[in-house]
Length: 298
Image (tube, helix red, strand yellow):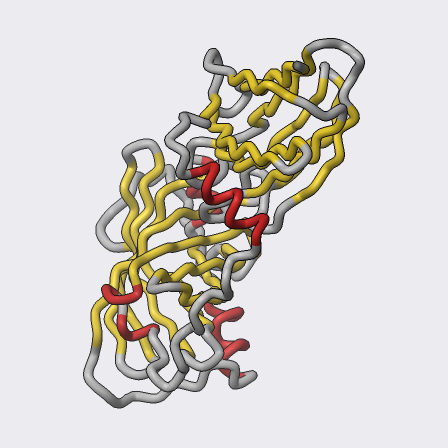
């Protein structure tokens, strides 16, 4: 209940001010299109909940419904807004509740400015939201994310933009990495299912990143119980750390999931480099759980 007290309140004044600035002018023409965006809404410092919008739109103007599910309580609100395909900006504001809710539930409506990308046929939306009450008092802030196949929402595709160019040829190091991935070995670690790697050199270069959709996964990385990364938020950019191995015959690299982002589980992609040999490992865990890689010196 506290979540809705913070989330579902009106933000009409923010929405109107953005329109006055002319970021996304309303234009009413062209045939209306239908689109459903599924994703999540996360309050700053709080949990994430499933969040969807079902919209109909013309060239730049939209209206429809938002749907949120918090522990089985479904709330639907009417929304209106606008979008600009060239700038890839979507503005939306919840305006009123559909149906009747418990009297004890004080509503807080969401307004958001969301940007999107179109990469290889996948639309990824993310942006900040602000919640306000009936008196226009701000009651919550956070982030909204969606992901959908572009072909299901053509209204967001700018046909005047040339398609992405083909990827550049793979470098020798990337080719070796791909060969290792395709070698058929099981390289997933999770709690209770660690991995042992036979090692040659006395150093290890560790690369760690979020190979999927950035959803706020946070991890700790330790080597022999010594932290080398603390509270590190995974992104698509690879973080490189040079690990100095001990003189012992075995060293333990542990990945601890501090949380689970908006899309469970916490998943970290890793590459460990031993000289010219690459080891690709995926660490996947629930929040608070750990998995380890044991580097065994030959």
